[in-house]
Length: 185
Image 1 (tube, rainbow, N blue to C red):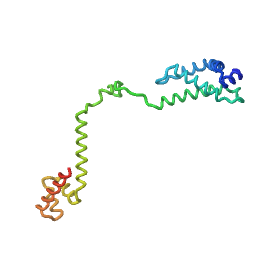
Image 2: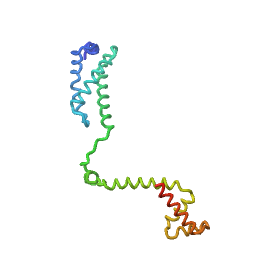
Image 3: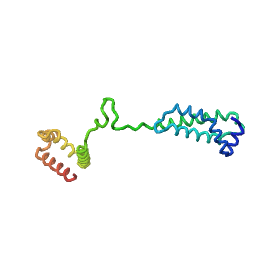
Image 4: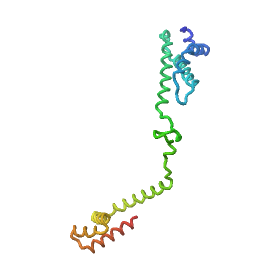
């Protein structure tokens, strides 16, 4: 490639720029045939190379015009590899109709939980409200409720014996604690 053509192209002469692009046409076609990127056609890759040639010509130093072809080729290689990195950094979108490891389509593996989801959300809301109201109880009331929940047919007696309290008073404390829970819910 002649250095005077490169200088004319660098200074903005379109005919000289087309001549520079034409001189790399074979290399561009050969390199673009190596790459098969998702979302890119052959012509798209050629356009990437052509843009890179134009940018590289404008970046050339006038003292280093002898090595300009190798500089332009290196710029095109880097541009194509950059396009590859852009495509490969994003995962390929999957379809629900693709087969999984088990041989079934992903659509068949999905469970219809439309009614169950709503009940789960409501259950979780109730659970959270119960936890918040449970936290309003005193430590003694929490302990008493825990004994009652763990053993509804003997937990209160066990609690009364452990803490040396009257059984009737323990039953009354349980009723008050449950009423307090209900009021905060």
